[in-house]
Length: 381
Image (cartoon, rainbow, N blue to C red):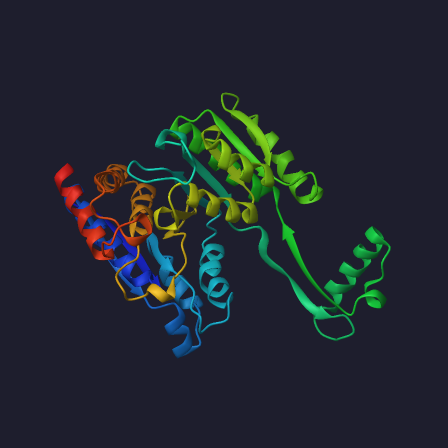
C-alpha cells in the first residue's frame, strides 16, 4: 500500500506558479519510485486573489490547511500591492498561525556550482542555519505616529516616551513631533525550543559545533537573554562545542572562512539577513531553499527568493531552490530516501552542467531544468 500525504499548494505571485510546477513534477516522479501517493490541494492566495477579492488568507482557509501534511509555497510579492501587505497578510500569517518556529536554511555549495568566494569548494560550504521564526522584531509591535495626535497608540507611546526620557534625558513631546518605534520580543520558550532544534539537528547530521548569533554587546536586554538561554540549553549537549558570534562578525567570517561553520542558530531578524548572504555564497538565490518547521504540526516549504515579477511567465527562472525545498518537505514528513534521491538528482544535473538557467550562466528553460532532474531521478534509480 502506498504511503499517502496531503500537500497544500500555494503558488503565489510572479514566478511562483512556474517554479512550483517543476517542484510538483519532480516530487511526483520520485513518489512513483518510492511508493508514495501525493494528494495536491491548490489554494489561490496571492496578489491576484487579493486584488479580486480583498482577502489575504482567512480563518476558514487556515483551518483547511491545518488538515494538510505540509504546505508547498511559491513566492509572494507584486508591484500592484504595497510592500508588506502580502508578506505579512499571507506568509507571516501562515508562519505564526501554524507556529512554524524554525526556519531551516541549508547553505550548501553543490558540485558544478561556482561560488563568488575565491578558492572555496563544496566541502568548505555546508552550513545549516536555524533561524527562530516567530519572535524578535517580527512580532509586529510598533507604529508610526505624530506625537500630538490621538488614537489607540497613545498608551504605548506614553511608555516609549518615558523610557526614552529616562535613557537619554530627552522629552519626545517637546523635542520631536513624530516618531516610529518597533519592539522586538524574545521569550524563554521561543529561545529554548529553536536552540534545542539546532542541537538535535547537529546530532542528527553528525556535526560537532553549534554557533549562536546575537548582538548582545549593544542590544543587551533581548540578545543578552538569548545568550543566557543558549548557555543553559548547551549544557544538555556536552558533546557539542559551542561559540558566540555577533551578527556583524559572522557576516564577515562567512565570506572569509565559511568552512568554520556547521550549525548556526540565530534570532529572527539576523537569520533573515545572514541567510541571504548564505544564498550568495552557495551560488545564488535560485539555489536557496527554505523550510518553516513546526516539528509537531504543519510545516511549510519554499524557495527563499522573491517573486521576480519581470520574469513571470517567461519560463526562464531557476526552479532548483523550489525543487530542493520539495526534498526538504519529503524529509520532514518522514520520506528521507525520497528526499535523498531528489537532492542527488539536483547535484547530478548541476555537475553535468548541460542544463542551466540564465542565473547560472546558461539559457535553459525552467521546465527543462525540471525535466532534467526528473530524468536523473529515473536514471539513478
